[in-house]
Image (cartoon, rainbow, N blue to C red; front, top):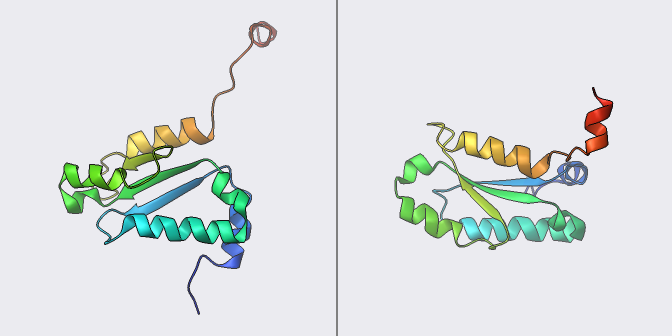
Length: 119
């Protein structure tokens, strides 16, 4: 009892544009945690696993080993973007915000007529 994502959260997540999986990079088995989350989403609603998603490895300042963080990144599907950040030091946060902006809120390309109408 008390395990899992919770029904109210799962209902909410159905309405979002995409999913950001945020993991503690110093965790023992980040890849397993990801696999369990994906399985829970798939069990609730298969379409949730099809939403655009990013993987964020946080607390990289605690590891202080870029090679290890890179190895962690390689454990995820190659089709997914994996970003490393440290909320404590701020490292990687600008890159994460830019990625979120471009990934989940792509800019609509303006047509020539749209530009002329705005003049």
